[in-house]
Length: 241
Image (cartoon, rainbow, N blue to C red; front, side, top):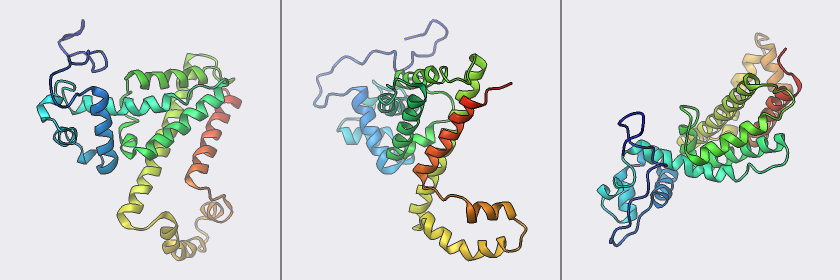
């Protein structure tokens, strides 16, 4: 099935589901995506393959290619399934509450599905639920007092996206490091505490010392909300001159 622009196949979201077959196991793209998500949650993206998904579903691997033509399409379906959960948070009456809710829902989704953090931040996701989240976010930010036109909106969206992606990847990376090393962040800090104290006592790092000694030590959730609020305050209170 060709598009009007090239011989490339239509995106997976525009192709109709294959006709039901007289087979012991009924399939659908939603069922395939749900199974792939369960496997990725348990084993990560490196442990995900069409063969493993087919085995989990009790079908032959070739049957899955009736529904997705390659791994990229499979990942697209998985990501958009997660975005469907995030989209449910975007129903708020006030712009700031909408942005906060969507960002928090995105964080919760990434913590539930760590592989999701590996797939965001690159090329835009264009599935229907990803577009719905993008629409809700852009529509909300367009109502912020500091956003006065399309250029301001693009900058605001860019700043918000950069923060969310960076914060989630950092948090997920720390979780993975704790699992792989058997040392959580508190134990790591305790182990390196004496060294850091000696370095700060040299007086060569006075600003870092202030941050370590006098700064607030927030947990990951508190830090995410605090930094997100800082960004929204900047969008609202400090319009570009």
